[in-house]
Image 1 (cartoon, helix red, strand yellow):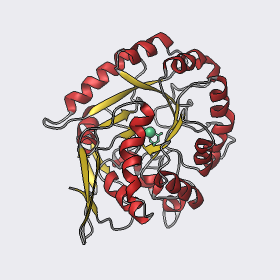
Image 2 (cartoon, protein in one colour):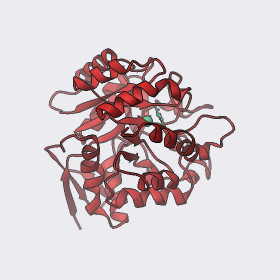
Image 3 (spheres, rainbow, N blue to C red):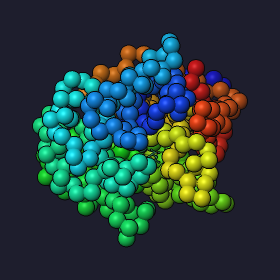
Image 4 (spheres, helix red, strand yellow):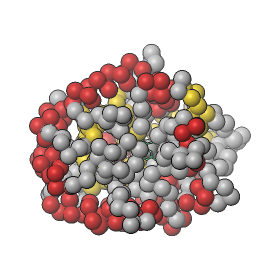
Length: 346
Ligand code: DOR
Ligand code: ZN
């Protein structure tokens, strides 16, 4: 039986596009389905100033294949030296949409992130004043904190104090992975939103570790226990406008993942929309997919919804997605949900 669903063209509110050959290889995978994306600034070196964001945006637009449309929403990487005036100017000109806070050392290329949160207070205060959203990687980096507890501890020790000290600051907790994250968002007001990735709706920590280590399921924040995955599913499919899609699609070449010290990141740009249709149908919530992928994000970011549409069709035979995307830097493995998927973007 064929079934189809047409939704407003979606956006991806958390995406890694990288640069150079990798950018060229992965950009069409996102631009094929998504109108806009929040572009993560964790390049080497990071995108710290308005001038660097403008140059990166030019490189993204130059890598976009002819005939495709896509609007990259640029983000500045917050450091302890970030100048509030540069941030405000880049926001006022329309160049930059948000600022990203990485606790130093939390994840890939986060060495220039924040160690002393007091040092970034002037930037956060300026952002609260101008209504500019702060995107944050919500994990503490303290060695004594277990990796599976780092999100919950971040909420108590860092996020809640920052929000209390900075009234009006609009915060996106990115890629939440725990019931604690879901509950914190639900207990607060509309100034707090959260993105949820496609892969965290599908895998729990067993998928990474049972029956042999699966490097292509390893990402940060790492997938948690099943009860947390179920809390994320409930939040994503609930229709609550504070939860929206941010895929965190994060390409690494296979040798960097399949290694004695493998990089964190799942590459989901290619099949995200098909997988989400599967997930939302499974939870009897196909009518909530458009909110999650296409409406809640623009509402939080105070941007118009996209004009176009995207049609998803369910077919009898399982759909085959490419196993890998080829870049001139090497192959990138596409996320495999581990079960047959019948939805495709048509
Ligand atoms: O899994 C992840 N990969 N999490 C991050 O926070 C960074 C990202 C990357 O850049 O590869
Ligand atoms: Zn990310």
